[in-house]
Length: 162
Image (cartoon, helix red, strand yellow):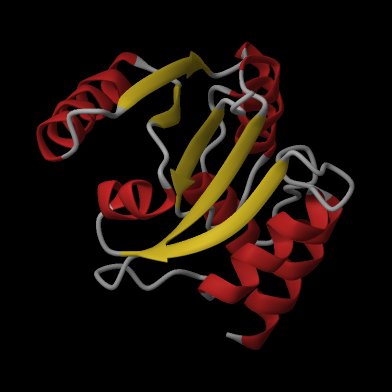
């Protein structure tokens, strides 16, 4: 029997409890989730691609049904290469839907076999974003309610270096 796999793409700079919640809930729908950390040459992330992958791998070390990888270029090219046909995405607000709807339709245009499955972000996490977490951390705010301990430590170390 073929495993149902979804690919959850994102920058995860840094990963938040909202991302983690979505990945864990994705495992209730799919047999396996591939967390695909995007290399975006247009954006300079706070964390390197290797640091983001390592943080996610540490968080999900005990969950064998989650793979953490990085990819460069178009998501649909990564999907085709891996034989994946399902994208998992989270929605926080109506504005997310507008953007995600456009992207989902472009992905279908480029790769007609692909489907995008949207899960609503859990209510307790819908206001969390990586950008807000970085900004709060940058000004010395406590972000431990929004990110795992390993990310709190990594943020503190990274911001002290800068």
